[in-house]
Length: 129
Image (cartoon, rainbow, N blue to C red; front, side, top):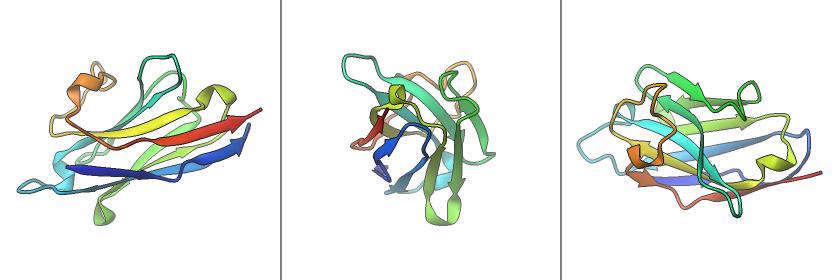
């Protein structure tokens, strides 16, 4: 599966951005067979799982640092997952990656990068104070 992120950029604190993750190259599988997650990595920090959606049933998970501010959703017709980000803070500044897994993700493990097999190239989000 190939993943391409878009929608990043520079925004002031308190602002909003929407990231998109366009998926392709499913072979004999389908978009709904996958879970897609968003991770981020700030300079000098470990990669952090921030949200995940199981495409088939649209179950969603969020990390504590973004809960209530970010919303993940999908559009199966476009093979795309979105991350709507509101009330952005300077500490949200990072490179954001989307990742896909053919395995169902549960609330106990969705945030583990090792569970995801395909990754996008990443996109920069910078929040100025």
